[in-house]
Length: 444
Image 1 (cartoon, rainbow, N blue to C red):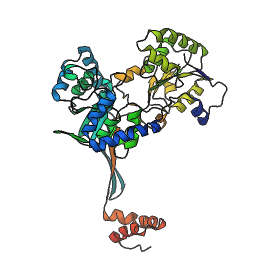
Image 2 (cartoon, rainbow, N blue to C red):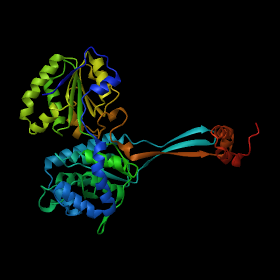
Image 3 (tube, one colour):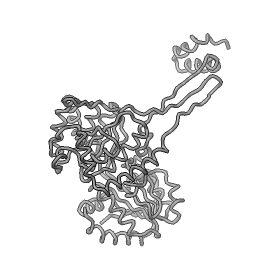
C-alpha cells in the first residue's frame, strides 16, 4: 500500500534528503493563473462577483453574503448537545494555552536618558478562513478565532463556503456546525464565501446593499490550493499566516511502538485529502511489517477508505527505513512535518531534539487527532516543509512589535558622534545633519 524508501547505510545530507523524501506535488505557482482573474473580478465587481463565483464553484448561489444573526442563532440552537460540549471544551483548552502566548511590552534602558520600548499591538482587522470541502471544520473556527480574540484584535470576520446540501433556514449558507461554532465564540460577522474569492473579498472589501465588509489587514486559515494561491497573489495588500498545503503526518518510531497506534494515526491524516501525506520513519523492519499488516486490515474498514487508499499509495506517503533513531531525527528534521509524532523509547528525550516541525506529539497517547481538536494547541500549522522556518498560528500571528524610541538631549549627545560617523561612512550626510542640528557639530 505504501512504498518504502531505504536510507540505511546512506549519508543523510540536507540536499540528499530534500530530493529523496516523499512530498505532495502541490504547485501553487501554477494555480495563480486560475485565481488571478477571480481576484480581479472580485476587486472590480465586489458582491456581484462573490454571488456569481459562489454559484460557479460551490454549486449554490449564497442566499446573502453576510449570514444573518437569526441564522447563527438557529445554528447554535440546533447544535447537537454532545458536539456543543466538545466544542466548548476545545475552546476552553485553546484559551488556556493561547492566553500564555500573549507577550508583554518591554522597555530596555539602553543608556541614561535613552530607552527603547517594544510594544505589541494587534492588527486592526482580520479575515479568518474556514474550509468547507471534503469535510466540515468547526475546529478550524476555534483555532482561528481563539488566538485572534486573545490578541485583542478589534474586528474579525469569518468566511466559509456555502453548502449546496443545506436546506431550510441554512440554504445558501455555510455548514450549520460552522455557524454554531462562530456563535459559541461570539463571532457575528460571518460570510458565505469560499475559495480564492473569499480571500479577495477580505482583501478588497465589498458592499452588498446595506452590508459593508471592510477590507482586512490579515487573512489566516487553511484552504485548498486556490486559497493558497490567492494568499500568495494578494500578499502585500493583506498579510497572511501561510500558504497551507495538503496535511501531513510523520511518525518517528522504533520497535517499541504499537503498530495499531501507528497505522491508525497514518490513516487519520490520510482521510483528510487524497493528497494528504503519511510518512513512517523507523529503524525497525519488524515495526514496518506490523504496521503494513495493520493498514491492510484497517484501511478497507474505515469510512473514507477510497480517499485513504489514494493518499497512502501516493508519492507523498511512504515508509522510510533508517539505521537508528539518530538517523531518523535527521530525516524528520529535514522533512519538517506539519505534524510529527514520536513513538520511541525515551520519547521525551527524542522529542527534545526535534528542531523542525509544526507540532510535536510525544508518546503513544498523544495522537495528532488530539491536537486537531482538544489538546489546547493550534492545528493551523505550516506544511510542505515550511516548518523549518515558520510557526503555526498563535496569538503572536495577530500582533506586531513596534519599537518606540525615547532619547533625551543628553542621551543623544552621548551617542550622536557615532551616528554621524556611520552616516558619513554610508555617504548619507543628511542623516548625520539631522543629529548635528540638535546637538551641534562634532568637536573631536
